[in-house]
Image 1 (cartoon, rainbow, N blue to C red):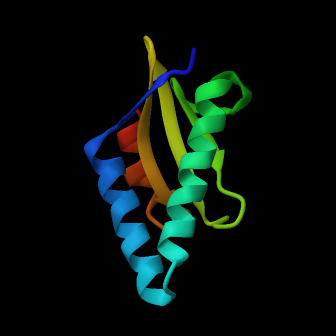
Image 2: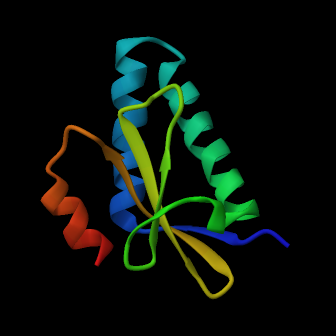
Image 3: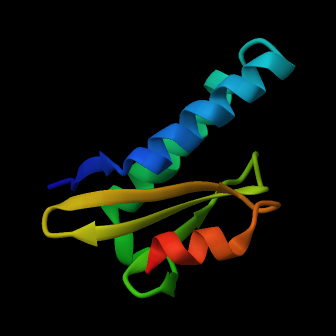
Length: 100
């Protein structure tokens, strides 16, 4: 059985912001970004232990095509909680605070 997918509000905002930015750069690119994020999350739902722990219970998925982005998640009971959709150039201190 697949884990339910729950986005923390900050992670949902980051996803929406990135999709909008990519869409401004090129029509369809935002959709491509979103599809890659959700494909990565499907892999995590199927096998969350496959992904490396980074801090506490948080695990990291590095996107393939949009390689500057990583998705951070944690398994909580019967759900996969998306904690961040984070660009690698952003301040890592902010990310560490959210993953605690």
